[in-house]
Image (cartoon, rainbow, N blue to C red; front, side, top):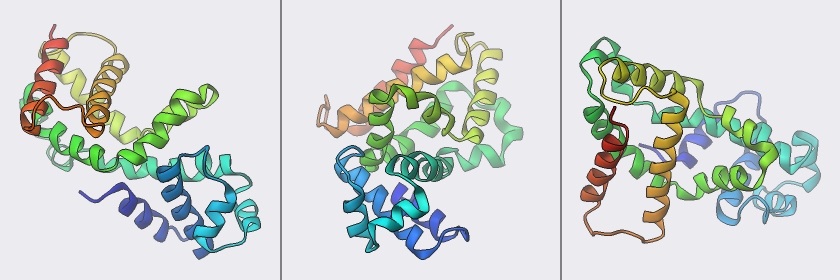
Length: 214
């Protein structure tokens, strides 16, 4: 699975509406926001790395905030569609045979590795979500609709089969995301209980299974 940086750059390079300078600004912005944080990155920093005049940033994007919320995060949102398992999309007719246990084992390990390898990118989302209360609703709308649609269908299936609790899907998704995110962040900080990553992932899956049992 390609890194978020690679997917992001591919998205902007194939966007005919973006000039080469706009592409350079977006690429430099994502790199700096991930490395230094949004608040610690100035438009001068972005202009220097993108090799453009600072005024070019304001001309095309208006402000640093617009650059993040109107341009970078929506493109990142589209990039997150890679998290939808292609096998599930292609074989929807076989979804009825899928168990919650198999779904977690099939989906989580690769996505945990993907998230861990792109931890700096997720920090952009997490930091803005935690500290910019007025932006939380905007950030939540950036989660790919296709991703929510696929997960909703699966959760409804697991409820019908009485494999998980009959709670609102949004609540179940929030609990799964917060648990997995905490797991990934803890691992990135070196807070592992064992040297065997597979064992830890198995424990995470068991934790989710037990916690969401009806």
